[in-house]
Image 1 (tube, rainbow, N blue to C red):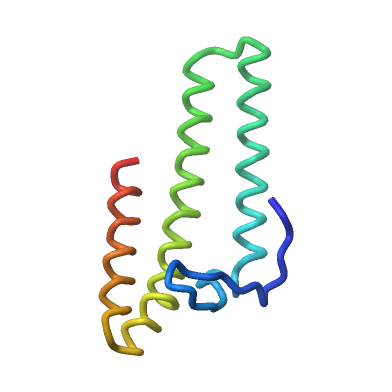
Image 2 (cartoon, rainbow, N blue to C red):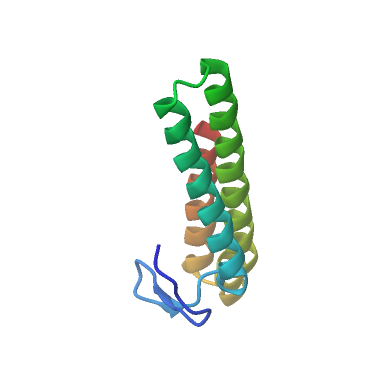
Length: 111
C-alpha cells in the first residue's frame, strides 16, 4: 500500500474532487491494515508449520474481525463526511451517495 499524505484527493465517478472521508484518520487506517497484513503472514506461517486446524481457524476469525472493524470505521467516515456533505449540498447527489452507502452496507453484511 502506498503512503499518501492527508491532503490526497479522490475523483468520484461524477468527476468531483474531494478528500476521502477517512483523510483525517488515514495513518490509523494504514497502521491497522499493516497489522492485519502481519496477521495474514502469520496465518501463512501457521499453515507452513502444520499448525492445528482449529488454531488456524481461530486466527482467521481474528483477521476477519479486524477487517470488519476497519470496514465499519471507513463506512462511518464515509457517512459522516462524503454522504453528509452530498446531502447538505442538495440535489440528486445526496440520494446517490445514500444509495451508494447502502450498497456498501449490503456488501459488508453479506461478507
